[in-house]
Each structure stands twice: as C-alpha cells, then as structure tokens.
Length: 261
Image 1 (tube, rainbow, N blue to C red):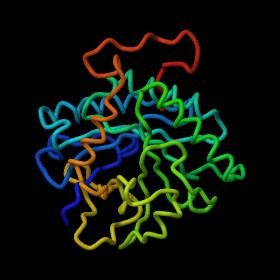
Image 2: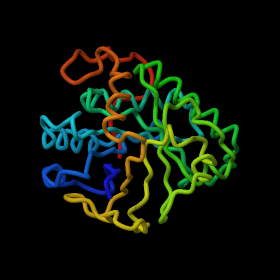
Image 3: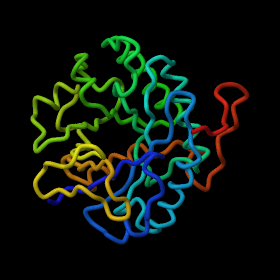
Image 4: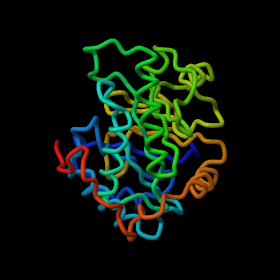
C-alpha cells in the first residue's frame, strides 16, 4: 500500500492524539474535520481539534501533511446560505491557509429521510453551495458522496472541482466512479473504511494512529501528493482568509456566529 491516507473526523469521535498521528509519518497525510451542518451546527470542537492538529503538524504542514473541513449539506436549506455558514466557521477557526484542502461538501442522505430527495433538489442545493464557496474563497469545493449521488442519477461534479467517493469494499469499479458523477482524473479521495464499516481493502489499515477507528480515505488522484499540492497552489486561499492575515469583516446579517452542538 503506497497511497497517502486522510482521516475524516467529527465531534462524536472526541479528541484525538494528533502528535501520535503526525509522528507515525507516511502514509498518514492529513485530516478533514466536520465543521458545519446546515446553518445550525458549528461546534467549538472543530476549532479546538484543528488547532491541535496544526500545532502537531508544525513545519510539515503543506509539505507532507494537510488539513481541511467539510460541510454536511441540509437539502431543506438554501445552499448558498450554507456555504456562508461554512466559510464563516473556517474563518472563526483561523481561516484557510496553504496547507488547507479545498472545502468539502458532504452530499448524502443520512438522516434526511423525511422528504423525497430528487436529482433536481440535490443538484440545485449542491450547485448553490459550490458557487457561493467559489465566490467567497476563490477555490472550488470538493464533492463528497456515494450512494445518494448514484441513486438520483448525478452525472457531473455539481460545480465542484474534484470528488471524494465513499464505497466500503475491496475495490472501486470504474462504473461506480462514473455513476457518482466524476472520473478518475478528478477523483481525489476514496473513502474505503468507516467507523461502522471495516476496511476490506487488502493491505489498507482499519485504524489510524492517535485516532483509533475513524473514516479513512486513500488519496487516489493520479500523481498523489505532488499533483494535489500543485492543484492547491493554483487555487491559493483568497486574500485575507489565511492564518495570520486580517480576517474578513464580520457580516451585519445572516446566521449567528455562536457555536452550537
């Protein structure tokens, strides 16, 4: 196994030992934190764990280690407003910087079973999020999804620049990639193992150092870290949004900045 690995964590996973994670070295290459959901969930946990990871990563950040955040899309709410909420959460946690992966929009059914999720609804909400994220940051979001995208018949990346696919199995068939609206040249991550779905991919770990049992993705983008890094530099964080720079002015309207859990 040679693919770099990225872990995906959320508040329910609790605190992690990021120094142990960093000390483990390759193939462990970074983390993506759940920062927000809808326009109502923004836990202090995200900023706290992000800072702990950044402190542990030190000079390795943006060289061999990366971090990022994702937003869990609520299809009952406006996609653009959700992008505002997500970007604000990242700003409150220090802002995007050179080692920060593109913001990820998590498009899945989850607990959203009280309404019919049609192709049009999924596409409209995701496209609105992606367009607003691009407007705010100058960067294209990453589309994360799996069963729902295939179920409703999504055939493109919905305004996002690249994809991450969840499929817990021993292989990732090309037909699944295309049925998730993307192609191999734009596939950044394959989430092959989850907290409730043990890895069945030979030679790939089930547990992450310092983290235990979490969602784990393999970086399958052709060219690996070097290719990803060059793509990231081409979409550098927008001025004023990197750590150590002046933050964007506070909005006078919109979602509250108070964190909830």
